[in-house]
Image 1 (cartoon, rainbow, N blue to C red):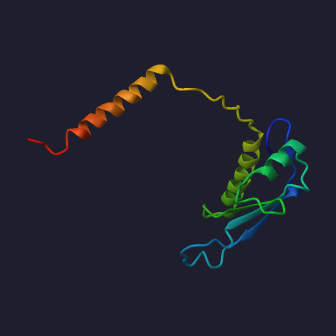
Image 2 (image 1 turned 135 degrees about the horizontal axis):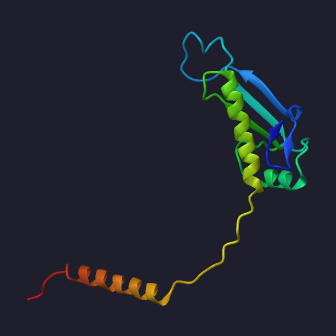
Image 3 (image 1 turned 60 degrees about the vertical axis):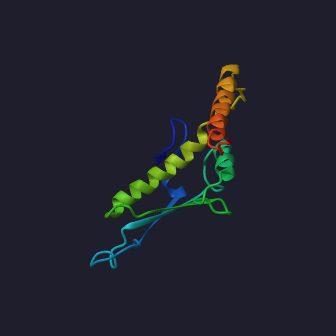
Length: 137
């Protein structure tokens, strides 16, 4: 069981894990040992609350397919157990990320002092550039 929060848990049967061979430069081990892990999680068929499902499906992430399946490939570590733990952790972080509600941004206006400093800087720069011109005798 994967814990997302105090109230939300994912049962193991909803997460499909399969071992595959890792990519990259090989050696004696890489061509015969399936140490990478491919994780698939169907959002529609899961027991997640509707709030999580809607936010996940609205998320613009390359790991989420058009059918609503999260696909995570973990091949960072040398052992299958470490890659499995990494994949599950990344899935939990992705689901937790949609639970956070961003605070709405209130538009602000620049202060009078900042406007004056900006205009003074522009006029100083203009005077420097004007001083570079040709000298007329």
